[in-house]
Image (cartoon, rainbow, N blue to C red):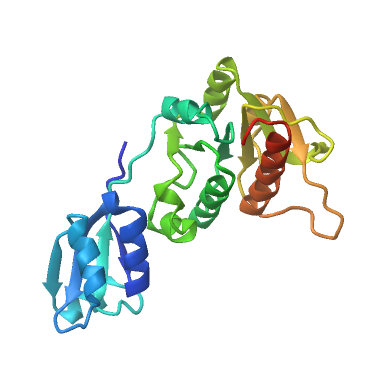
Length: 250
């Protein structure tokens, strides 16, 4: 599955980072004539098979919304993994036997941050809905800081039905929402799918009904909720701690 839209990444550091993290999405590197672009950046583009085209600086000024430093990378064609591939990864030795599912998380920065968490704990991948949710993009890649290259993302038509399918395959479905059982007292069985709700409404009712259990992070201050990526980090690392203590991960 691919995305058709072409996005632009500009500035020498962002361009270099994107070339390293997601070379398969890089379509063309535009370089302002006369710009002193570092040779290592151009070499990476050539090694990735990305065409390097010189253009007038005025052209980059027109298409970029900030300081492009003489370089602009056109990206697109994001590829999503098949759900079965994520399931297979969850069963690999030495990997945390868990997936992360996001229920209509719309901010690409949150998706990027969740990918970083998934990479950090060694989770098998991330599942997102196709509609009303952030998908892979240049903004996600910037926040993920390289995790788009190491964490596969599956995009599904119906998240509730996908959770049912995963349950039939032996996964426990653990939702996170206010009013759930205390995270630090609740059972967290593996293999599992950690399900986190969107920024505004949390878990949708039809998704919450598919959860085998719902856990909540204790909040002892005045704040009533945490950012979805922060909550993902708290729950995922608690799952990792227990999995390692129980011998589910080396």
